[in-house]
Length: 268
Ligand code: FES
Image (cartoon, rainbow, N blue to C red; front, side, top):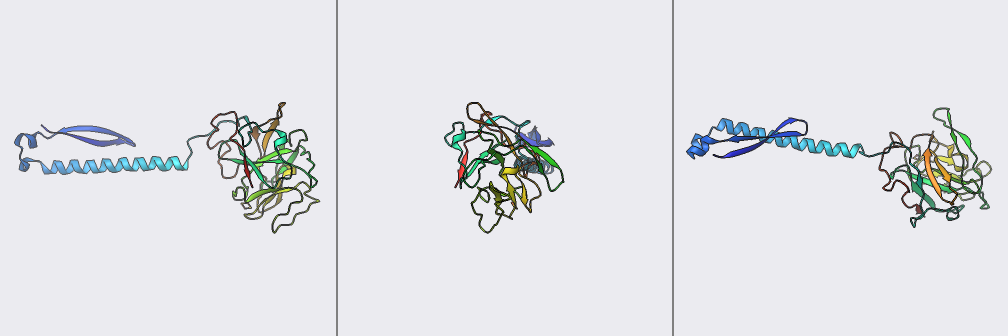
């Protein structure tokens, strides 16, 4: 007796094996005794089952690409670490640097600027707590201000709120440093700006990353920082607009350790 094993779909992504014996063909060992209508039916079922299985696999793969399966449920508290993997200290963060300092928070997919705000003479400037205006809605939200010995360390999302350009095309420019093709008032923005070269949006790091020039209609969302007694920094919260391109701020890949960020990136 010959035993045949067939795969039949019973519901989405689930299949059942069915054993069918072909006693007629085996006993007579004669091809003319085979029931060809039954054989063709079974062949058709095999092809259908294989097709359904393939569609199920493809659907699952596409679903995983479009919708990340990971995320977080609350803003984590993460110590910001330097390029050497050690906790960053205030003295590590330069003023008026031509380089861009970026770290990731609240998940590994979201870059943020880390800026030591200073005037054109290189003197750190306190960034006071303040309400930040949202041109798109006419509303405001509260920014808690800078931290560190001079309350001059700030952090904002590095994804432009207009159409999502990322560093280095969106770039902090310290006080007195010129932006190619752009003129801004040193009197109105004496402590530098953040400028996006994609379409010209500008934000003020001394004013909670409020909008200076459009086309953006939203400020850059701030990361709330804590300056610890051992001189390190902890990122622990965000508010303001949702990070550009995210359904909410919690979608993405969590940090592996859950206690520190990945090493900071310095972009020349
Ligand atoms: S994406 Fe930044 S100005 Fe358009």
